[in-house]
Image (cartoon, rainbow, N blue to C red; front, side, top):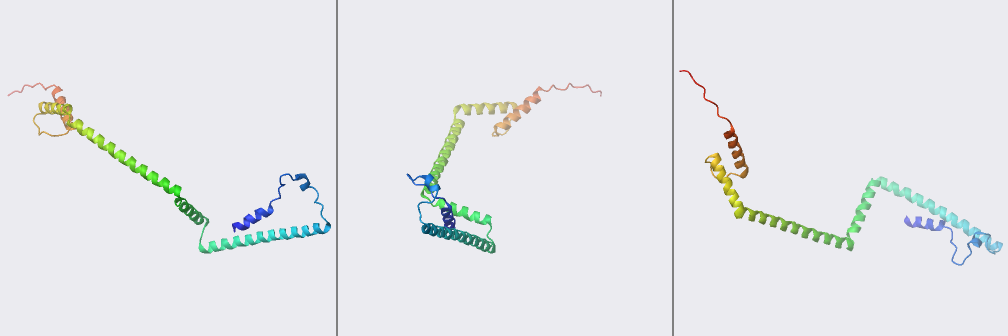
Length: 186
């Protein structure tokens, strides 16, 4: 089908003047041809025009036949587009450039994943170091002492949030003014 279209395009183009050929002479009166040669060229021209028209009609008939077959098979333009895209994608993925790019991106992703994993490990290690440091242990000890002084004896453990909550609750109670006792009559 595409061959017919290409042929039609080629046959409908006007000749272009070659280098050194005078374009004005080409567009003006016919070359010095005899009547017989001119008549022969006119018959050939008519024959070529008739062939072009026939090819156009054949192409149109083939296109109608193609449309009928597609309609009978239930192939829509959308399905055709999907098939063309799928085929195009398959062709792209088969190229060596795509494979090389895909391999490179896969390797880069693996390296990035390894880097993030190692960063996470480093952060975890640093946090453990901080938790095991003497400064943190001293701070933790002071908080525990404060907790036991303010909140009384409670089982050791608890998290920092519980300590703060109990400390604030205790300090709130100690700032309240005590009620004065009222005298009662016997």
